[in-house]
Image (tube, rainbow, N blue to C red; front, side):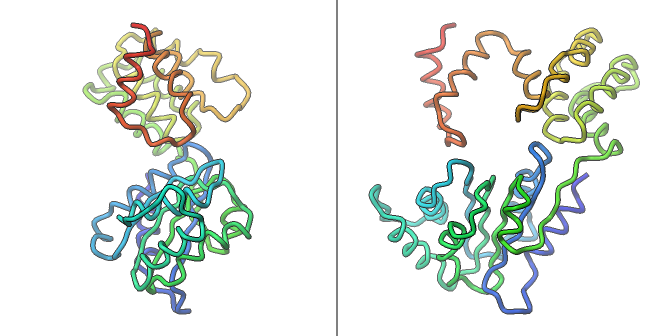
Length: 280
């Protein structure tokens, strides 16, 4: 259901600006769970873009906004060496500017919240020496971020029912035919409607129900009070997925709260910490 957006974004990434600008910013705007990051990933790894850029980098910006962390992260992504822990922002930006000079680059700034123009203007300074045709993809929930960047955004809308049910069905009935389970199919369609066209919610709940064969288990999800809770920034589908976990796994997830948002986990490190601190 996102092929149109993928093709639009690929076309814009491959286009060359007639005004001769060195780089162009392409914001992707939409609510939580609508698929902004998924779209950016699909295009970032698209075969049509292979060998079309000299350098590629992906950084999760998120909150709190930290220009030094972002700049250092971009340098690490493009393989820059000689980075010191105590490098100032100015030193990092000089290194990034040198690394991008004369290069056609593709940079993804994922999950941007900061809409202060002065700070954006400072952050983008190192991008200026890049080669014509360079692109920066920005994913954000805030229209004000796209407006600040002065570029025409790609607006991510929720999926229509035409695409919502097939997406849910593909994940929930992966190894079975819905027609052979009419009761599950009927309840599943009602659950899919409650996901309100959000791909993340549809795939999360479908994945949860894939291993459940009793219709009453599906009805329990449909009747859950979680759907009626006031919006607190957590998708009901994610809350339902969490509450369905056994206690020992809930403890593992709760333990992850000690890490900051968007912390880059090392799998072995987290498993070792779980073994130490999460009782069996």
